[in-house]
Length: 502
Image (cartoon, rainbow, N blue to C red):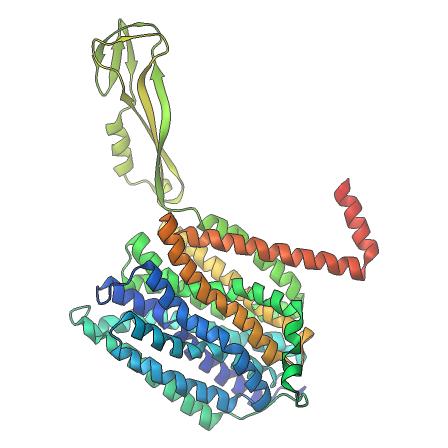
């Protein structure tokens, strides 16, 4: 590995990042495409089928990251990357002829190989930069995650253009053909302008290559990446139908809001790499998990209206009910005023800035007695009703989504900053394995989201899952950190334990 960074290093970083951006745009293609096909009635697919179509290409990209990472370490990245781009162009082009769930799912499996471009790019980028620059270089390369924003931002507009705003919906088939053409073009650019280079490490047997996978540390990094990358990929697609269904947004607007999540998350990875170089990856990851817990907790509160029993009215004395109306009840000579449901409904219909940001309460009372009825003291005359409304304002929701995307983007760079320190000669292999585990999050989560939505009826059930995963990640890292302190500095660990007991 060269200790000096030259212009060729920067050129390869640019090409790798550009190719990965295109791969990522292809990898998350189904987020927009499947939403369009179902919303326009072209295919009759439910939430579970949609979840599978979102997840299948992510699975392919995840499981093939390891073998492609190994091939990149052994042969260099030029021909591996170019071949991958050309291969993915074929099933992407054939998507234009899909006419069933099975056909579409099979083609999704094959164009999902684009996601494995991450492992190729990680190994191919790493060989061009010294250790002191690894965090920044891999962070810049990882900004290719913003390819998800390219799809969510541009694909809906292109679909509207091709179909004449839905007049000729069958013209959706042009979009995958354009994607295939871009893949071929990028492959040709890579062939003519990239320079091949392999790691300086000596040749190793397959057993030696796979030996790092025996380390629990690799699996721990993979679990961290499951959250910050896999869940990012899942939401890069899931947010499109989320905004369409929960807020009634058009596909173009939904794509715009989804891009506000995916684009900054990809670009901010550069900052995450710099922070990891300067502050250390462990400190960056601890902050990532804490913020993820907080933001997921805020996002998991659903848009809702809750009707619950409120404050009722009881008779102060026994007697006969002489009058019952929506405004009052008269028992004997005593009158009891009622909170009006009509007035509550009027308040609900009035524009209320605070009601759109915070939960808002409405109260009214409904008579449960009739004229001529004899009542006893403390008998219920009117039941109370309370309605708690929470609009889950779309702009607040989008802001929180933007923030958690940024947090995860920083965390993605933090995870990969660990790898050159612990596995300097197996960056491609270990990076590929970590990418496999992380990518599985992008496969598993959309499917889980679909089932959770079916079971609970809550779109925010996906964020409840994120909250739980974030808590597990933080717990595991704190436990490991504590064990390191006990091993390396037992005196400090003993002092911490004494303080905790007091």
